[in-house]
Length: 252
Image (cartoon, rainbow, N blue to C red; front, side, top):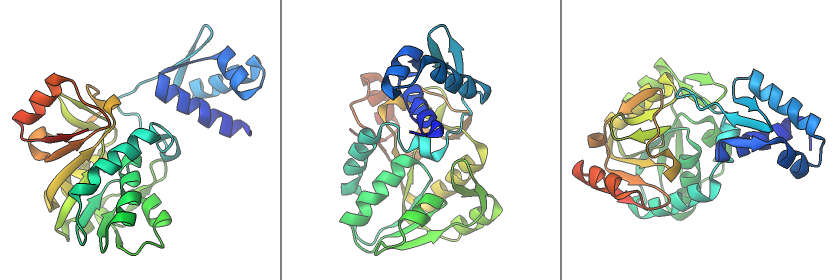
């Protein structure tokens, strides 16, 4: 395994468990503890983790914008579970707007297999790359490339989105909070999601259960703008009651 591949795996463990231990990582990758310490030192210099005695802990910034490759490896089974629950809400021939989240990407993979004649408008570069052979219509928003998240944003993307009216908008988010609403990590993509929201008849939020009671840097919208929330397991009763008050249908 190459050093950068090992660090990607360490990142995956950090984002999943919030902390890692030198001795365990050394055993997992069959390298010396000194090698792992150098990996953690590099992650610390990048501002991702803070080293401590025996390991490191994740720096959980509200404006943290994870690389797509990292997001795509976290909670993959939960994302597939969520994607399968979405299927009954999407019909043949539907028009969709979608964001760049890895959860939505998993949903699109299933939808493209199980539904016919979909039209998908997206700012995701990954979707454009990976869905070249599907029998559906894929429309790019165009725009300015954000390399880290592999998304297209800015004025061109905004103009494209405002040209279309669609049946469904599919989003994910950084977190949801009873007090702060639905939040995300960066402004350019949040701005575009707000526009997508305005152009859609039905708004569906896809998010794994770790995002409950988390707050991102940017508020995207309030719960009364949401029709469905799909997650991987039953939320706490407080959340179910709260979402019911706003007319949000919860699927888990």
